[in-house]
Length: 238
Image 1: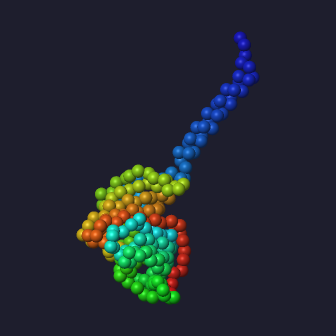
Image 2 (image 1 turned 90 degrees about the vertical axis):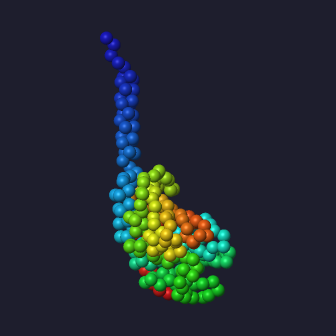
Image 3 (image 1 turned 90 degrees about the horizontal axis):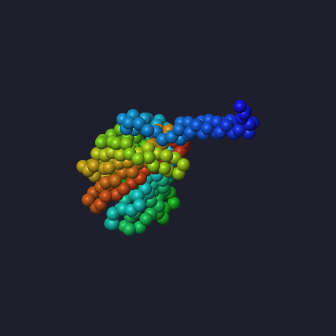
């Protein structure tokens, strides 16, 4: 009986080795640290809330592509928000049809802005410009963290990609009273559809919320994005 050649034996050994390596690779990819968090909303969203209220700070932005015609309001807010809560950054507001960029500092419940054509900060009421106090978005009891546990009819949605990160989506509804607590222009009697996106570490990375933020003048969709968890910044009154 002929014995198998060395070449045939080597080929079988290489084939077996390739199979083992492929299987190992598939196993490793299946348990990657980059896998998105998946779980019931009642577990994932409270954990995301805890991550938000315990972080020292985040990079935060609130944006909308457009406002209803003849509405004075906020188009964008970008900056650093801390657990204090405090905020330092810039607001872009629409006033009488003009877009105005305003540096803003909010600390200890007071908002300061450097208004156009001025050289220093002055205390302002952001509601006069149709804008929220951006620091209040970080307030643990009434801000975005509260949205995560106050949302009703929450359901798991699709996974979406944001750059290299895969986010798990959860959809629900927020009452106007909950939204009004941090964005006072919101209609307290309305319901606001909301979409939360959670990263692989269980942290809230974005919120998309829509509804009547400016009374009966039309609905607006705002996106709140959060990044750089653990940011530290000493924000003081100017």
